[in-house]
Length: 277
Length: 341
Image (cartoon, rainbow over the protein chains, first blue to last red):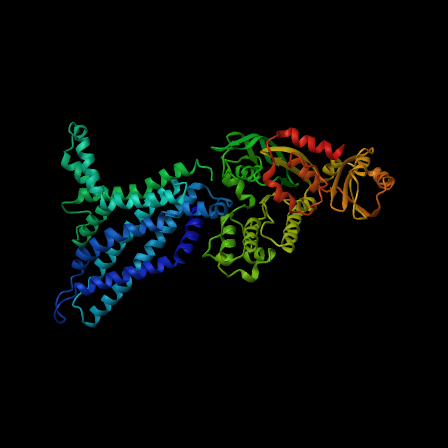
């Protein structure tokens, strides 16, 4: 269980960093701040809209922009940092394969990030829950809140996996950093523009196929993990997870999330495995 | 069975050939000292044994398995103290050792291992706060986990004080007594002299000498170094130096301030003193010292300077590490000739 040993060590290492603590605190503060913004204006008895809080505030501002950034930051130096410092020599002097190292890092750092996200959401969640119990809030949808937290963590793990793959392929910290920035810019800022260009360029190729341009465009949109998670989480909040009219899109989104979790680390490993360290 | 076997191994990096056609065999159960100045290719060789670096040509087998294909299986039976490694700053010393024990699927008590390397009192501290020597001890404790069949120690004494280096040697000896093969690299000779069954000297990526410590001593022959303190302000005249140099059995004469350093055969001592007195030089004092491995090491690793220099000590090799110049094997051979003439 070499991979598990590396994942556990990396998790222990990561959760001891001040960055992780700061991260959990930041999430808590932001969720709390949004909760204050959407709180009911008058006295108790008004609906406290958990869904409103998540869908229009926490979602766009926190989850789809900040969580990917944090995932990239947590992941980009996973392998290249150890390579540059020399601790990779200590790690590989033990009976671990390079594949164990790459996937152990994805698991360990993914778990550490998930813990930070869960802690960050649960603290304000507990406060909201307590307020609802005392009657200060009319309702607080615990299930929706917890479920949404899981989606946020999933998105974080996907970005950790992409960044670790990049880190494994990079020969220096500098290149890993450039790769990490590129990942963030591509997936969070430029996805629409890039895929739009791609669609225009490839329209000649798509036309003869038995799929419409429209369908390819939708697929490309949900192929972005942030859009995919957005789609799935709003379906979840609307109680239509993996059902309803967007079910096909949701399935595409789920499979693309799996793809992004596995393919980048594999590609990175392919390069890392042949490198002289 | 062989513990380490390299056949025709060459490693070319983009800008330099680090190792050239290297054949090296380390038998099971022996303590092998791998010597050479900095930049000779020792670390590249060890990195290939550990599969951190893949050879351009040739085969590397460790514990009768292929270094690349069976790397994990090999390292399950191998303890490694790497060179130029870093620790996990945020994890305690004990966590490091626990991780090594778990990785090797061994059942050692981490505290016992930490105690063996003298780190038990600091076991709960974060390794990021450790000194260089403590990090070295920590990596050694990790290497000893699982009672490995093969110990590979890359410059094990770097960062250790003399007492620490002595403890390191004792651990090497204990491990060898247990039956482990020990392969370690060094540019410090005292260590090698004290613990090695066999020594290989690497220079510019090639093995230039390989023998037991006694064998290397014999190669130095009955050669001795005679240090003669000369009385009087003038010291020795050139004529006196020439006279000594012309004597049978004298291979080299150097003037060092008020002293003459003469490399000569065993029986030539009295003739040297006699010749000096005949030339009117007052000999105030003299003493001999046995040619050390240091001398031989310098002879092999430097083109121009044979042994018997007056600098002595273990640090000479370090300082001169970069000065190995490009005149190929010939220079090393010439060096040997000079000592053993």
